[in-house]
Length: 500
Image 1 (cartoon, one colour):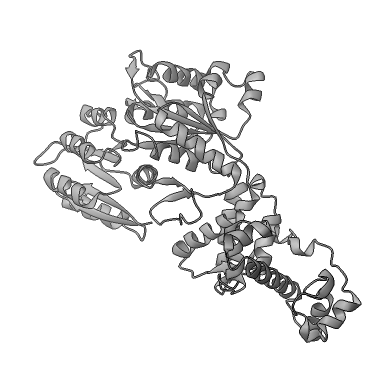
Image 2 (cartoon, rainbow, N blue to C red):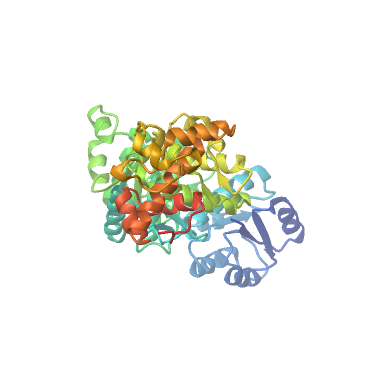
């Protein structure tokens, strides 16, 4: 997805230099020479982020920032100033500006701040929607929580109940189950969805940096603190903060987080001024917080405070019936991202994915589908395109013992060419698997495994669909599979949905 950046600065050389340095295939850069022109560009372009100079010829940068907040408070603004100790930049941060940089801007720091701002903008603006029906196809403008299994239906119900309540939410689940996506869904269905959303990984920052990031610090609070820093709880006032991996938070930071949850108050590091804020906290972890409490590694009172509303995401191995739907979702997404035209996946490959135990959950499945699509040279993902870890799983249709054909069945089937004949009297199999296998071997086929499986699927699906008069929902229920899986199999076999 291509994003956009607006630079508001009255120095043409700076604008040109930044535009040439930052523009890329994924980022479009616009410039404005004054405050009024910048505000007009914000209204027209709705950029994903803004680089704003404090001193402009017509309006002060602080006033421009306030007006940008009125237009869309979710647009992150990075303030640029030529004065390292200016109170104006710090005041803009206090009001919610994303960051401030001192001119001449060091490109590495600018790039890092801009990447974070663009990510925050994407999380705030791109909706995370619930995949509530199989006909609710994934849209390019939204991220979807995909699944129709009973376990996921319970997740949807919980999100629907919790989202409007403006209460703290704790999301539990193994790594790769989609905790951040669930947090964004809570945000987008909440009453704060027009205010910023910020995600912070508590495990990715050292203790001192995490505390400073969340609560800010005063000048001189510790070595290297040469300026006051406004923390995220102050910046995102009115919005939502997602604390990922909260189980990795240090005891000192836990104590401050508890006070924030109880009173919406805190002090910056090294300060004694109490700051009032208004943020909603959504926390997530893949750890057993209850066990950590018993071991003394997590505050009991904080655990109880977080544990009021809990969303538990099931691992993929417990919702394996959602694999075909997830594969279809990822194929559509990666077709856009990779410029591919993959239509579907073979029955054999899909069955291998269904047999895998997915220790990495949805994230692992996503990587497997991407890998397969990169390797695929046609419009269908075949078994040999899958990663080796997935190919080790045997498809289920080869794990069922083959029933030997009776002499009556042999007579009814006749020669090997008649291996696909209609049902045999006495309830025998409609297909002599041994005869079909021998024929394929005689023809020197190199895809015996796949062709036998596809032939079985073709006969079973056609027979059941005919029995149901072409009703896919009824056929899926008789087959014991979801309608999405049935549709995927029909496409892979090039069968018309109305074949019945």
